[in-house]
Amino acid sequence: MQCPLLYRFRVIDKLPEKPSEAATRGTLVHAVLERLFDAPAADRTAPRARALVPGQWDRLLEARPELGELFADDAGGERLARWLGEAERLVERWFSLEDPTRLEPAEREMFVETELESGLRLRGVIDRIDVAPTGEVRIVDYKTGKAPRPEYAEGPLFQMKFYALVIWRLKGIVPRRLQLVYLGSGDVLTYDPVVADLERVERKLLALWEAISLATETGDWRPRPTKLCGWCDHQAVCPEFGGTPPVYPLSVRPAGPGEDDQGRMGPVLAEAGRPVALEGL
Image (tube, rainbow, N blue to C red):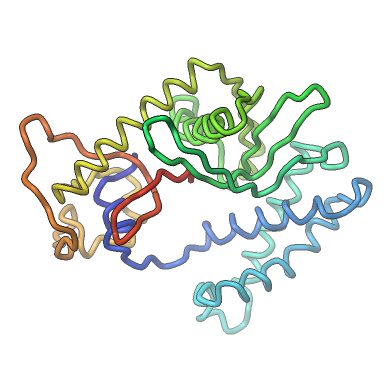
């Protein structure tokens, strides 16, 4: 949905991308909030959550040693200390938005997967699922950035509706509420979906998959320039910046009449370089 050519670089060409401080901080904060619920309700305090940050960073480094490159030139450790402090502040802000002593998540970092009647497989990982005593389901997602302006809110909500669709098709339950918790700005965005919403999302996913399949077969992946291009790791091989993409690694066929539309769906899994399933972000 962001850029078809970026999709190709990531999923088909599998070009490497450098880790970023912002994305890694998000991963760290998510890990801390997940682990906090291991403690009894009364012990889920802000000081305890902050204290989890250094240990979770160590665990993250152990699992992904390449993340150490982020601070390779930080001999004195000052930049790392500031970065960890920012993560601690994000974690602490969460306590002003939700009260973990009153929450008992049914699931945390839950992997979900389902197959639609069309054969399209959907999968993703949901940050948190709450289930009320009445059986109503709430899907919660943490964001370490700032809440978007209202006119740009549909993008993040689409991700949540994707998850809601998976739960509906998997469990037969339409989630009562979708909740985005923005730690960067201290905002909480909620949406209560209905069946018609999820049916629209399913139709959109099918259309996106058709476009992805077509682009995969024809090799016709076009860049979609936006302000986000400035943060892209692939400028050197992007035509928008004067670069030349790598030789397309798959066999192609010419596009037929009316087959000009490009895919707009972000990361998916791939098998031998070919996409096989849509994956939630």
